[in-house]
Image (cartoon, rainbow, N blue to C red):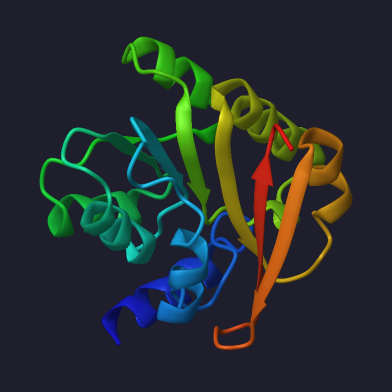
Length: 184
């Protein structure tokens, strides 16, 4: 319940940064994790982890040698993540994702898992973030994001050769999961 209250407060204080009134459900989490190449992934990035629902699943499912970091802009969420996942590497700006990967000398990401509320971002910010995702993603990698509408479908289809959409009604609000690949 405390995560819900933190999310609600953060949403009302800045709805353009926090795109939901509640953390993601376990049903949404399962859908988000379903197509990640856990066995072979060398680098995984999470964008917009919020309170860490997906982060917890990623840490449980990834191999110990897989490089992993999160990108979270909100200071309150950053603090919560540090407390819940000691030692986790946190960067703060998704528009600098490609730079972070280069600075850390990491291989291109095999998976980028995003909880960012793209629909509420200004077009130029959304464009910069998606440009960074495409630049950072391994050609055989997967970009997985969720949204509360199909508003992002056309934009994602312009950037990725394959975009699959699934849906869960068991989330507040119900959510669409986009699984995107650069190759067919």
